[in-house]
Image 1 (cartoon, helix red, strand yellow):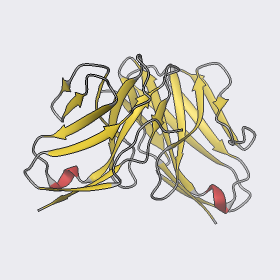
Image 2 (cartoon, each protein chain N blue to C red):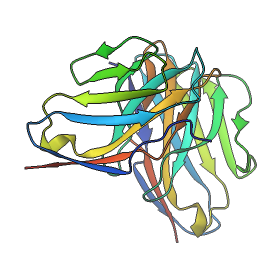
Image 3 (tube, rainbow over the protein chains, first blue to last red):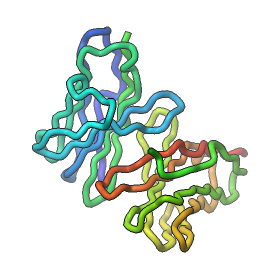
Length: 113
Length: 109
């Protein structure tokens, strides 16, 4: 079946630095990629939707200059958390939409210290 | 805003059928119902989805009421590995999945 590879699975970074998270669709093309954030004991919150080759659409309250999304190809999307702060610590998950439906990555646990 | 309502938690005995309810009274005619589950600190796992008709696959069955205002996910023979948070989700017309709070299902030996 369709697989989305998400890396890294865990990252610890210092406050003020930037972190890049990658999601790759293996063996299929993702027409749309969704990025979510999940805080402890809460549900997934949609951050942005990106289509290959076009700018991402961000949900209300999500800063587009802080969470940079690139979807340059049908198999790769990246989320860069710029100038990270402790309140950005969270579980970030990507999801690819294709003819197979919605396939989720395994998530990235970001801790900003 | 979430379009689904689920009980926050449920218990089920191992080997029994687990029936997880979901209300989606404001669902529109062309919006699908999806079910995913999430085991702690992992990505969500697809279970099943449907529009109007009942659906069954190797993991579960999905029963949708005739008025489509509610549905039930059935895990026929629950095992300890089925312990997870189960999300009932409505897919919007722009293909976004609108997540609710989910049900924490605990399977007890």
